[in-house]
Image (cartoon, rainbow, N blue to C red; front, side):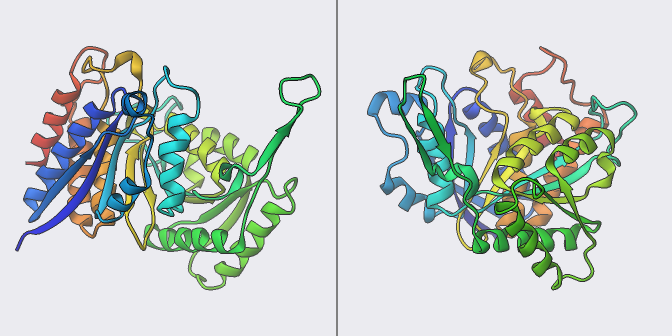
Length: 349
């Protein structure tokens, strides 16, 4: 019997609509193989919509998004809009309003993709970063005085709570338990003793409930070094909002680049949002030059989350096969965005 899911689709800016189209193509193809169908609702939010209406993401739209099973997002970012308007008005608004408290970033070197790290293969780079997504400096606590003068003072506060840390750490332990291997906490507890001392205390408390999971702590500066020199030492990593933002992009770099970087913004008890993390790339928008693999792998994460991991795995297998067999040539100009999507859908068959 077929199962139907409702998906909210926000193509967004730049290459967002192009890569989202390929993600939907793969989503529907995998769904057809596994008895899953999708009803999609398109939303116009992004730079063009803001310029036309002055609206980023209204409360009425948030209410509609909550009624969907998942949200698929292309990209948000328009260089002709003031900095922060779209990012804060759409992305951060969704994170906080929908309580998307986990940002999941798989860092996986795919077959046939070269890492900039010498002599590293897919068996060496296979990490999941669990990033806390609703606290830290991103909540916007702080302010400025004497702005615009040489006496200006700016304050941006780190805000961490036991509740917010615990639910993120618990999710990370459950992830590590499924994946096998160690769970590392990445922090800067030797300097940020109050905020990150709380992370360490909560991490140690929750660890007692998962005696089968080996644990470790790593300072963020050392983490950056080890990701480049010894990526194989990591399997699952849990970290703060700010540090997750940084190390996940470094991870994407060692795994071949942003064109392969999928992500999930999760509320395990509500609607979750899935997006590639490469941005809107306005310089190549509309030219068919964008790599849609990150968006397609984000669709696989969507399937995992709404209860169809077998369909999600089918997409990942199709991507691995197409890349590993050399069917996809990622050289500039070799294939268009839609051609890459077609090859992956063909590999599904």
